[in-house]
Image (cartoon, rainbow, N blue to C red; front, side, top):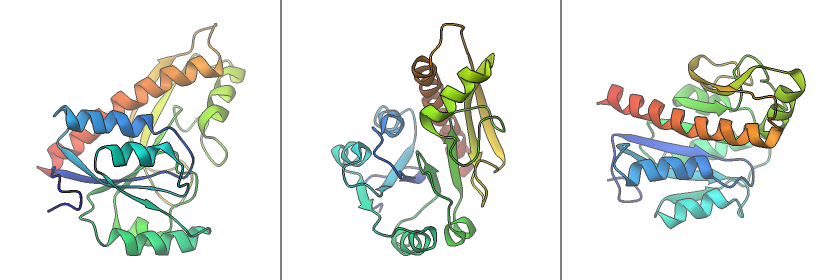
Length: 200
């Protein structure tokens, strides 16, 4: 039995390291609730107790956990111990801005969604609005979202899939962000559906 009493072919753990609103998480919760995705979110983790993603999880009876460690090594150790309690199939990073430690990398399949067409506009410091401002300033014709496996380098893991988004001349960083987020949610649901099919 899964820790929250819900079952699915894919048990995912979500890691947040910011005070984000958790809209991507909500899109996956909605897909599960609407029977579009046969998965189970076992745990949502953040280092901020006021991250709204945690409240979104609690609203649907999903377990939450707040990280107390500060360094990458300590967080790796803390999470490795915590996740032993869960039947983890996949870890999804959403706004997780630190490197993942070796213990987690060696034991789990970990994926990350990034708001650009990697390898462009990736690496340390490239997250959130920083990415969209850089794309606008560079005069790119397209931006988009990349889903990739996580390794020990920022945004360097093997690519799973990408979705392009047209950058219009009138776009601002804010309007581009909204378009990329919409594409991100759709792409992530589709990718998780594929993980479920492979697991079955």
